[in-house]
Length: 254
Image 1 (cartoon, rainbow, N blue to C red):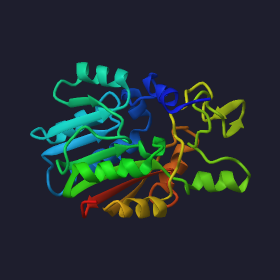
Image 2: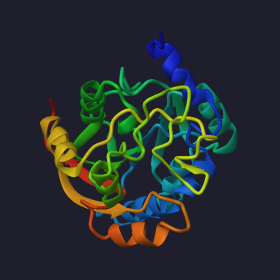
Image 3: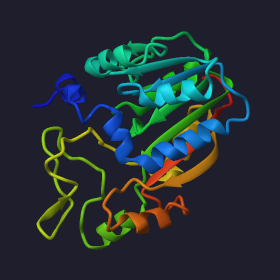
Image 4: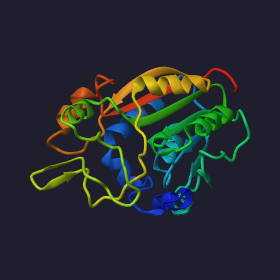
């Protein structure tokens, strides 16, 4: 039987925690997240990157806002150790964000949650903690694969499982096979994606925890060269995009 602690051990594996290579594979998402960050109306002075991995995105935020205090947390001790050695100006901490964030209340102007909520088991505590550490009118940027993507609609129509949803912490189970190739690639380790959101459900959930969505963006997450152009085309329609990015504002304390 896999318990909570043993399941979390997958985040100590290279290729699972968010290193540079993992970000570059999803380059469209990284580019859009940077664009959203650059276009923030009020430059933040305090920033938190949750599930930072080795800190690549946190460091990019610091490049954009060089006078900001940028904090970063991750459950992976290995990722935090690498990040501390690589990015000296980021304030790293090892923490489990779905238990408690190691910061006082109402401290951050901007919180980033990149591809983390699909891995979270206790989404209620997670979003309560994000609300707690954000200032009133503070901004949240949260990203996730999209349950209702164009590809998932087709897969379900033909009786296949949705893409990005993982049923095992030990092995990658392919959704389909094409010309002796499996998708996802069975040689890659699972990354803990245990729940996938659609836009309406995520907007509603954020609203329950005092986070009002102001903007919704679609983004391409698929990397296959054959399917990428189609995926990029559908990214202009967030409901059909393979990935979604939501920007929200904290309206009240809980």
